Length: 305
Image (cartoon, rainbow, N blue to C red; front, side, top):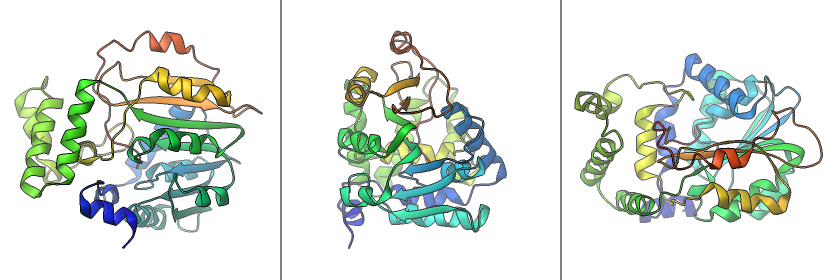
């Protein structure tokens, strides 16, 4: 039995791939286009023609597909066998014969990474904080970026006491049976959407029995909720910690989008020295950090498809 599956069975890891396997059947051209639009905005580019794109922890493969549609030569990997299966299904349905490699692997496996080489774009949405060794994973991701290339990462925001509460929720979810898991999902949804009318929350809790609402990135609110409540291991960080970690690599911060100090992911776009990746000019990190105390709207809690 492989180590990932063993951890899932012990309750030490969420079955991320199982969740994405359930999601991938919902993918249609509308979701693909939303993912393409999101990727363009995230990277600050119109297309990825002639570039190589590495999707770290590819999940369903939706953003690998988006990168392919934008012209990139894509390489995807995930530690979860069911996630790899989901991405292969997506490629067969939407991009048969595409220059898009999908394989099983871990960002924490030095041997695997040594065989990959470097890429023009390294993309890790909501992945590194689920490895159980977030900072080591961050360092490994930096090492996969070609000179002048782009690194995009999204990492859960550190909310202090609330983050510790969510850690316990996630740990309990993975070590419980169906009834407790259902109760944790219900309670978490009520808590997260507590500012919404009760009738709206009830509709959200109807889950996949209703048509899955398409989110701005092409994701599904229901599957994002499952991912959020179950997503374990779980680590968090503050923007100043991430910027400090990036500093020894001389990475240029091109963009920083925070979740206003609340629940969700902070998003970072870096460029490695040595060339131009064609993205926007560097942002003023002090300006972004000044808004960390704000409230803001609830962000998407899922990570990449």
